[in-house]
Image 1 (tube, rainbow, N blue to C red):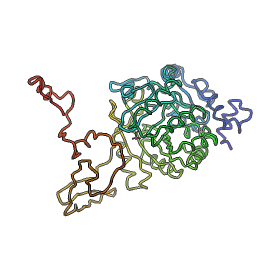
Image 2: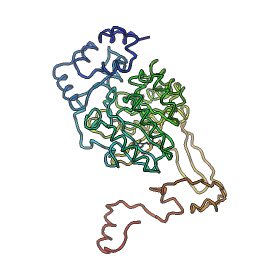
Image 3: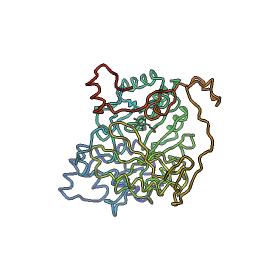
Image 4: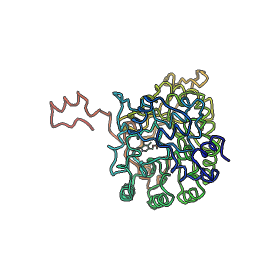
Length: 443
Ligand SMILES: *Cc1c(COP(=O)(O)O)cnc(C)c1O
């Protein structure tokens, strides 16, 4: 059953067999809205000439594509305030580049050992398997790349990526991303997943896709049957607003969940779209009703063209304050900033630890109650030299291949002698090198 809005759009798109074709994902992609004029025509709106010129300039820099399905979610009477419109339709403000904006704020290209792979964390990699999307999110962090013909991964590139994963035994988790991996046909995706599954050290495969949000008809019985063969497979999707969880989206999510695929959701905090504790709470409740676990809430990245979407970090903290304790623990996402310069995701949590003595910890809860937790009277610390045979915990790890400790974990580890982490360009350490050129200055 199509909604009245969908019937109206189908008619405008001269769709003779609305009920069947409308739900055909390839029809949706063929009829995606890629220019301002078609948008005006379909939504019965007119932009002023100045605005239209500015919009067309924006589209030249950052491509426009909206599936008829996603377009049908826009409330036409007040479209300028519509959360779907704001995520899908360009704004002239995208061309404003502020001093802090960067084309690649997460340094994904610098951490790329072979084209298409970003290897940032010790045990997992991002694998860009597609460069296109059915809908181009205006808030995309990879705006510089998507839709650009120069970045389309061909079979050769995909093979090199797969070879890198095969040759890198510490990679136990691969995250297929893009673009949208579900833009690939089932056969290609099946081939990639099969190649990856054959790698013994690879424990899990994840797919990041926005299809359940912008083109739920892509989730077909055939796709799901194919995915099921490659377990353990996890999927993360990207709902930002409760309005996006429609009957069609719910059906797509149910098909994936019924196939035993654990579902997560990553939202981005966006000014004018979802920067409101009530909207986010409604969103996470609808997600868990549909068996989707809210995973991350992202602070908007410093990518070029996103300045108008950014909220202060305080807004995110305020939202987290409204969720933690107030609702089901599994409905609460982790609020993160993806560190500019490629530091990875950094979690941000409101402050709950109020104070601390050797005997007691003072905490506050979500209601504002100040409480104490009594530390144990005696606790015998165990020195860990990573010799599990001699450890009374008897946690013999069979052949577990561990990565060397890094960061604060390195400072905490008993078996590592490092006592400090020193920035590479610390002046004082550089002076030491100048005065005693032969001495080692850092560990
Ligand atoms: C987000 C991300 C991952 C996955 O991180 P998780 O916290 O495990 O979800 C991996 N690699 C890169 C480059 C990422 O940005």
